[in-house]
Length: 318
Image (cartoon, rainbow, N blue to C red; front, side, top):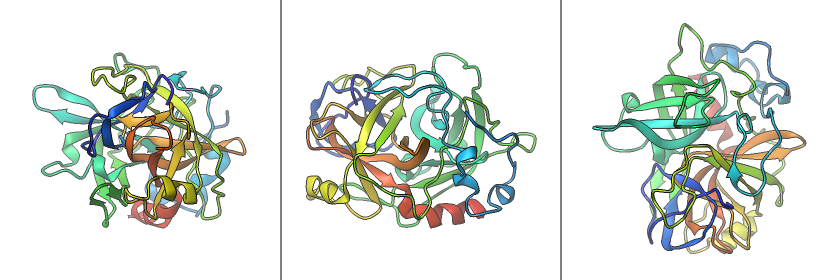
């Protein structure tokens, strides 16, 4: 990303949990990194069975993918309401309490999508995580901020770690409060899931957002306020060409700028890649991995949501 998305540290895949938006300041220190940053329904269902009454409930344009304010281009502090599907996933650290861990995306009043590598760690359970939505400034309580415990989470059964992440997707179900999940508003809204026929057009403008590093070389440059930047979808052929030696595979897409400068990076793994398709934001990807941050011809790699659509819906029905 521009001046708002962070970078990654060293020459190997960074440990899960972090991928920030970088506003490069491009970094050469890190080789591989693991990613990781109106019309509303009048009433929302509170149970998964109600949410999934029809195949298209979650992708109906009137129920998702709309923003309250104009989009930000070029990597900068985001306006509150610009990314209403943004989720902050916090993890409990002894001595520190709950701290920022990963990003995610709202897909229903009870469900969040994120990267599997954010959750698939030894000895971690649902009690180690909590979910915040409507959050903008991590240093203060925001207008529509809501916090939930995790009821359970399911990572893709074929998730694997190698030089990169395969099948890097997970579904989190929050613990309802008084029988209700997220309370939808101008600042808390799901992103639309793609359908099986949603077109994947190279050059589509997308937004990636999160609380990642703003200086690729400075691990302490973590912003308190949500940042975002605009990236472009690249063709599958181009992505394979640019990442041929790094295990780019099916279930992945890449996005960025071939001249570098804008990217996602360490600090917001699992964060949303939301693409503007005919005026509605579609959740096309989740921040997963990459090589360096914001470097020319090294676009970030994202989990391809459309590829995992059937699995996601089956998990939500459980």
